[in-house]
Every structure is written in C-alpha cells, then in structure tokens.
Image 1 (cartoon, rainbow, N blue to C red):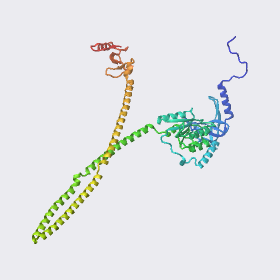
Image 2 (image 1 turned 45 degrees about the vertical axis):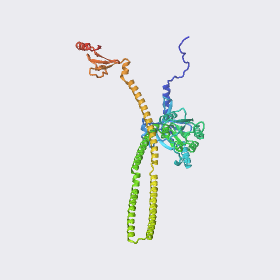
Image 3 (image 1 turned 90 degrees about the vertical axis):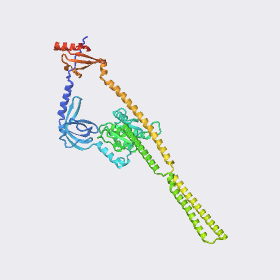
Image 4 (image 1 turned 60 degrees about the horizontal axis):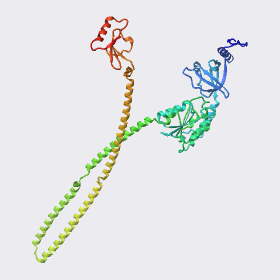
Length: 521
C-alpha cells in the first residue's frame, strides 16, 4: 500500500479562502455599489478616537453593520443618535477578516424617531403624568445602611465592582438577588427582585435591606430595554426601600432611572453614593472628640474661676455681724448715758421740791413704774432686733450655702477623672499603633538595605574617593579600588590589557604595605 494521499476524482475548481473572500467582495460591491437603506440606529456611541463611527441599522427582523468614515462625519448635517430612524446612502462591502458585510455610509438623512424610542417616549409621558417621577415622592437615602440589597447578574463584573468599592469605603453586609439583565425576561426578574426585597420582614432570618441598588453595565437600547419595563418602573416607585438606579453608562437613560430615588452614573458610582467613607467618619469623630474634650476642659476651667470669684465675693460672718454689733454697742452706750441724765434730772427736781414721806414714796413709785416700763420696752426692742438680725442672717446663710457649689465641683471632678482615664487609654492605643508602624518600618529598612544583598555574595565597588563604581567603563588600568563585603572591606587594583607595568607594580606595592590587605586582579 502507498502512503500517498489519493488523488481527487472531481473536476470542481479548487479555491483558497482568500480567493473566495475576494470574489464575494467584488460581487457585493459590483451589485450593491450604491444603495439607500432605511433603518433605526442601534449601538451608537459616537465617533471613536480615530474619528470613525461604527453602529448598526436595524428593523424588526434584521440588522446591518454600518460605518461612517471620519471624512464623511465632518460633512454630516446632523449628529446621529441612538434610536433615531435614518435613511443611509452608501455602498455595501465585505470584511474578509470576519466573513461579514457592512454598509459604508456616504450620507445620512433623518427619517423620524425609531419605534422603540416612540414607545419609550409614550411610556415616559404616561408615567410622568401619574406622578411617578416627581421629586417630592423620592425618599432620602440612609446615611449609614446596615444591609444593602443588589439586583444584578451574579456573573458579571458589575457585582464585583460594587462589592469591591463597598469593601474599600465601608464594609457591610451585601445581599445579591441574581437576575438576568438582558433579554425578554429581564424586566420581570428585576421586578420580582425589587418586590421580593420589599416583602422580607424586618425580624426574619434574612435581614431586610436598608437600601437597594439595581445595576447593569452599558449596552445598546435593545440591551437595556428590560429596564424600560412599565411594571418595573411602578415597582421601583412603590418600593418601601430607597432605590439607587445604576443602569448603563452616564449617557444611558431608562425609565427606572426616572422612577428611582437616586440615579448613579455607573454601578461603581452607586456604591460610592450608598455608603460613606469609614476613614473620613473616623477622622471626623476624632476631631469632634478632640473638640469636645477641649470644650469640657475650658468649661470646667470657667466654672472653677466663677466659683473662686463667688467665694471671694462672699462676706465673712464677722463682716455680716459688724454693723449690727456696732449699732447694738452704740445703743447700749446711749442707754447708759440716758439713764444717768434721767437720774440727775430727777434728783435735781427732787431736791428742788418739798420732800415729805408721802411725796417721796409716790415719786419713788412713779419712777419705779417708769423705769420698769422703759426697761421692758428696751428688753422687748433688744430681743426684737436680735430676732430680726438672726432671721436675716439665717436667710443669708441659706442662700450662701457652699453645698451646691461642692456638689457641682464633685460632678466636674468625676467628669475630669473620666476624661483623664479616656485620655490615658487613647494615648496607650496611639503608642501601640506607632510602635507597630515603627517595627514594620524597621523590617522594611532591613529588607531594602544593601547589606542584605552583600550577605548573598555580592560586593560593593568604590573608588579611592569612596564613590560607588556602577559601570565597568569607569574603571581604568591601575585604578585603586575598595571592595565592601558583608563581613568587611578589601582593597584591590584594576588590571586591563593596556595597563602599564609601573602602575601595576605601584598598586601592588601599596597593597603589600604594612597594615594593608587585599588582592590584585
């Protein structure tokens, strides 16, 4: 038997792949050299960095790839937009690298809004008339949610971006409701997810989210059509949990964006809106704590100064009794003199009158009566003054009692001790963190030190001035060198093919000098 392949018995012509592709290209360009196509623009994202624009023209049953070169874009009278129905004039051609065909557009004319855009506008007007998009209906987002529910595809990059950003900013519990984000069932699945999160009880086995994020990556109008579902827009508007819409890129708009409480430009932006930055919150709390500590210290010092000022303003008991005591002494001295004067006056009158036993007895009785009356009045007045002064002193002493001041001082002292204990704890924790950073820096320094490299068998070469020699071109014949090893240094002299013997001998003599060590190489 022969190993050679059997010869073909057919008379059909054999073509290469390139020949077939070229023949198809010529046929298509000859037959469809100039065509006018009516369709809806889909997948348009504006000119690329090269200036060319790539998109599709579609109707309800087919799609046709289209391209507008940079020179043609500059001549267009209007800017193409997603969903716009246009009439394109150009020629068909093929792209052999992918075995597909496309239209190279030479001119574009608007033909009215596309069917999908017309349907979307009709839904938008109807829902807006019902008040689903009113700003007054939208709820405020919780500042620091405990649980966040995410409605998106579990296999895409969107959920990874959201979880990664939440983990970086403020780690918390995230619940993912997996749904399809493209296709005929996307709208119904997302609607069921929003209603399902709202149906969770607050005290159930699965924690009810405080915030919902409905997210999807960018795409064409057809890719995002599920998020224009009317039932989904109503479910988001009726949600008892605040909703952030993060569908598509910043230029993509859907009905859910209008019905949601907040629209995020991207899924990553939704994560940034949903949670604050933990580090910033800690810094704010630290700053507020420092301000509180300073305010308490200042307030306590002001209270202490006020107490000292009040204590200095309080009069002593001697000062309070000085004036009454003086008045009482003056009254006592006047009473003695008045009695003496009265006795003298009575004596003079008695001596000037005719004295008889009866008259004397009567006079003595009258004087005794007057003296008793005056003494009783003086005693009554004295006791009344004493009682009045004692009552005024008691009222003043009650108002000037140091007990309230002592209680306030005790409360402030307890607060000061608590703040001092907290300060000691904060300083201890701060020192522990700084000590850990210092240890880490020391380890990093040891790792990056050139001595670790020398320990692995390498050497550091320096010239006579101590400068590091980095290239062989810097070394000349007879040059004195210093080699640094891990355990010490050694001197050496460089030798090349053009080195002079006298210079070599001189360097060798230097190495052999007393106290010198090294080698010649």
